[in-house]
Amino acid sequence: MLEILKRDTTIFSFEFFPPKNEAKWDTLVEQLHSFEALEPSFVSITYGASGSARDKTHALVTHLATETTLDPVPHLTCVGHTKEEINQILQGYAKAGVDNILALRGDIPKEGDHFSDFAYASDLVTHIRSFEEKKFGICVAGFPEGHPETPNRLVQLDHLKMKVDAGADWICSQLFFDNNAFLDWCERCELNDVSIPKIAGIMPITSLAGMKRMAELAGGTNFPAKLLKRLYKFQDDPESVKRIGIQWATEQCSDLLDHKVRGIHFYTMNQSSATEEIFRSLGTLAGTRLRTST
Ligand SMILES: Cc1cc2nc3c(=O)[nH]c(=O)nc-3n(C[C@H](O)[C@H](O)[C@H](O)COP(=O)(O)OP(=O)(O)OC[C@H]3O[C@@H](n4cnc5c(N)ncnc54)[C@H](O)[C@@H]3O)c2cc1C
Image (cartoon, rainbow, N blue to C red; front, side, top):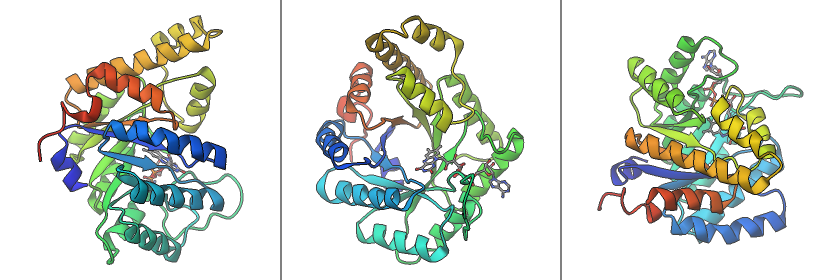
């Protein structure tokens, strides 16, 4: 990661999830060309709770590393894993030439057995740092609007600091729709000696159903009234909803760049068109304007 941070004055990254079936896999593979053309700093791949979803993450990461020009950063959650299992996964990624890992705890399943050798993401970061076969760059999650499990926001910043002290190199934020939340959180991080690069998580809303799913997954995220008013006005017109969502995300990105944020991470939902459109509007196609010469 240090190389990426040195190379790109502004980081642009895209997040994918492993497709559930073969048809969706083919669609994503076709779209990868559009993503490649945008020359992101890296792409990240989510990690699911079930065993089969986990295998799919590995398959997609390997495909990206070997068949495309994209630099994959796998998410790795430690909940439900033993130390041996984590080591096996790390060995697999080292072999595939992966350089960076997004280290997470994951959500604790409401039911069933979820024994873990690592209680929190900070424990996983410590372990990855001590992994001898490869020195991975490590990203961790940050929550500008708070993580639902820890209502005390001061304590939560201490938990973030623990991940940094354990060896994290950069932070990728939860998605947000109000830039003030992110910018204020960045300032609070600095006050708490969390000064590693922070990348802003942006998700263009492309449908009301997608927005509701995300509200469920990213608990605590605030949806500003100004945005909701615009969206609800056109709730029977999916095309207008998409337009409004893309325009909102573009305005967010433009404002974040004006505030000289270190990077923007797009939750793409595996669709290239919205991200591509935002890139074009920002004038950052292929990242040429923002990438320093090497
Ligand atoms: C960028 C990003 C990507 C994500 N990708 C995935 C993914 O691919 N798969 C997936 O399943 N989930 C993913 N998530 C969701 C994430 O796994 C959940 O939000 C999870 O509940 C928190 O993970 P964490 O790594 O922040 O955990 P932690 O940093 O361990 O924090 C979890 C909670 O525990 C608290 N805490 C931390 N340390 C301590 C301590 N020592 N004592 C007491 N409390 C403590 C924290 O304040 C927080 O409330 C992602 C989230 C983000 C922001």
